[in-house]
Image 1 (tube, rainbow, N blue to C red):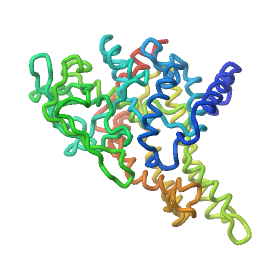
Image 2 (cartoon, one colour; image 1 turned 30 degrees about the vertical axis):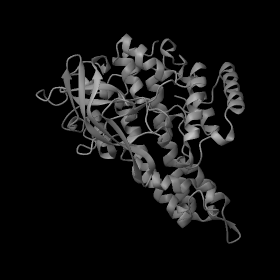
Image 3 (cartoon, helix red, strand yellow; image 1 turned 90 degrees about the vertical axis):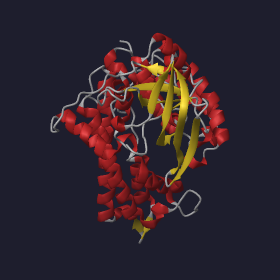
Image 4 (cartoon, rainbow, N blue to C red; image 1 turned 90 degrees about the horizontal axis):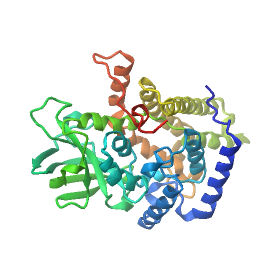
Length: 412
């Protein structure tokens, strides 16, 4: 397998030039991703809401989703080109709507639900957040306490969530997607359903959390929020399967076609560029070794993600491979955070507004991010359990959840 991803066809290279030219003409510098996401404003958010619609019309917002629902219908090679060019242009579309719910809607939604929910999400007309974590259960999704009680054809949903990710400039998305207990007497994993819930419903409150990593996490409070029965995705006892389809991507099941690691690259650049004692910092053998260990860890993580992405788009069942990339990425990023502090010293803690901050203060942002983000998606320990179950060294065995690739929903 060729991991270099450099063997592009002439047609794919022409596509790259088309994408690059469009980005240069349509994305001004002031709206590109800043070093610190906290510098994105509500005005940026509103501007990007419109721009995402334009990109969806070109098939670039969700490039590998079926065209019939508003996706691009493109192959993985073209999606790789898009990710490379978006990265080079400092564009991160993931800030504006959570994409993991899209997989579950594509696999489990009825045709009517796909037309009603999936199409406007893929076209950039609506946004959604991912409603999983609860205060008392943490990474134990099966331990949720949110309840959905039938009332005629509707459901009344009551519960609360914490650490729900979403760009602060949005204030509120159009929907949240997540599970609730629909049958308290049913056994664990067979007692829940997954709902797509309009956020503007009476009884729904969104409250920002001000954390070390920023204010892009939220509390959600639902008090007898009335949701039509048509908003239940899958059956009322199928919530675990539906939720796991969405979580498969969050746990690494799709990998990445063009993974990047700016923290490791910045560390190597800092070692090369920083002058000390008539030479560069990178000439010190200890700094040299530390920097290269960080770079090699990053490169290995990239290979694991590319392998997973290749398997996914070959319609193969991704078992331990995605979990392996996920766990390795969590652990090496923490190791690299320590290496960055060792090499850069206190300069690694200077923020974007300090003129002495190296590389625009990117490392300070990364240091804060490492303090919190490794708890996302079920925490590292949860993902180690998933990996152990899939390679057969746990008391229980686990197979990957059905995905758009393995269900045939992505097409041939």
